[in-house]
Amino acid sequence: RDMLKEKNLPGLDDDPEIFDQIAADLKEKLLEQIDRAVIHAVPDDKVDGLNQLIDKSDVTDSEIHQYIVDSGVDTKEVAAKTMMHFRNLYIADSGERDKV
Image 1 (cartoon, rainbow, N blue to C red):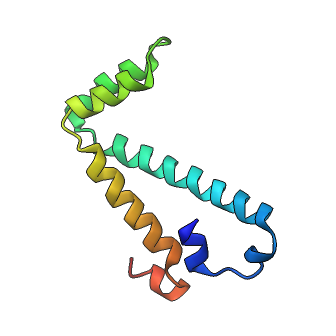
Image 2 (spheres, one colour):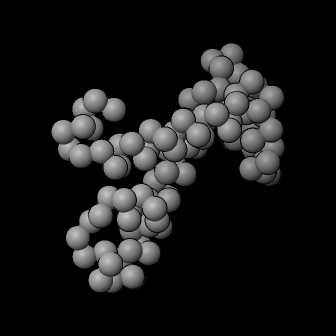
C-alpha cells in the first residue's frame, strides 16, 4: 500500500476498489518473486532433494521451508533483498529502471 501511495498513480485516490485490487496484485507478484528467489538460492547439490520433496503428494509447506533452511538458505535475507529490489523497480521511474 505504501508503494502505491509513493508511486502516486493518478486516479487511485478516487477509487478504493481499484487501489485494493492493485495492492493485492502487487502483493501476489512480490510473493511469487520471493518464492522464486528462495528456490534459486538453494545450493545446486540440494536441488534434486528439493524436487523430490516437492513431488511428494503429502508434503507440507513447512516441510519444504525446513528443507530449504536446512540446505543453508537464509530465507529472511533472500526475502528482504527481493522485497527491496521489487520496491526499487516499482518506485523507479522508467529511466531509472535500467540502473536497478
